[in-house]
Amino acid sequence: MKVKDVMNTDPVCAKVPGSRDDLFELIREHDLTSFPVLKEGTKQVVGIITETDIVSKPSETQLALLMTKNPMTISPKATIPDVIKIMTENNFRQMPVVNSKGFIGMITIGDIISKVIAITSSEKTIEEYMSNTALSIWQETPLAVAKKTMSYAGAESALVFDDNAAMAGIITVVDFVKFFEAISSEKRSDNTAGEGKEGSWDAVSTTIIHTKDLTLPKVPLKEIMTKEVVSTFSKATLSDVAKKMRRMGLYQMPVVNSKGDIIGMIRDFDLLKAYAGKDD
Image 1 (cartoon, rainbow, N blue to C red):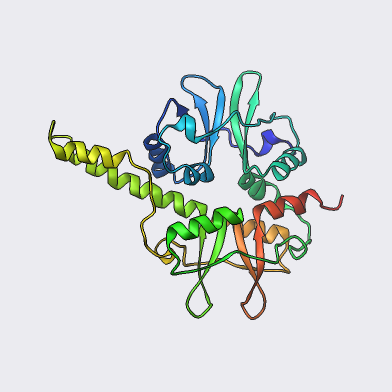
Image 2 (cartoon, rainbow, N blue to C red):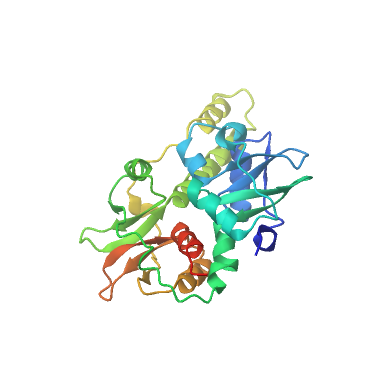
């Protein structure tokens, strides 16, 4: 199987020149948090914008400075093992697909999970591929502290525990992006409301607020965490977990034992590595 058999041939794209507000419009409209970036009016790929870019650069408002520039691309003729190798070695979640005429699509981990691994007949389980540790954070932790903790740990997600040490939810980088988007929407609404007062202090004030950094308020993590946590078991097969990830739109799941205790995490990257090492 090749990249052309799995890739998305009609992905949503961001364009440069563009702004953070343009990006948040795409997020609202399509419920996505990462996009290839094309030069306006061309098929030239100039960047990729991801959740990590948005969260790690809260003061940046220009898309050209938010995005990761000059991303690695792949040919539609490349094999799935080829793209898996590149993704796992470079920690890529997606890659632009290009031919001699330019950009023609995107291939993501989700595409490989749903169109390749989910339909594999292998009975290999996730037990030897799952992580035996999981970053955990208290639900009353302030958002800014939780974000910094995840950043230092290099983690895209963390389990959230309540006062009784029971799992209360999960937090991901995507949750922070959605929260930033909501903040941006509120600021834009304030700005629009003041536009009719030309020359007034109110109009100037709302514009100044609108251009400030996207900062996290001093509210606890439990305010934005996902409370319904989908889990799996260590004896689940790669295809079973891939199907559940595809169905639920997830890229990681906690692994629990028969008592419901957390014993680790399984990520979509782990599934890629397991599939790449499958028996011939």
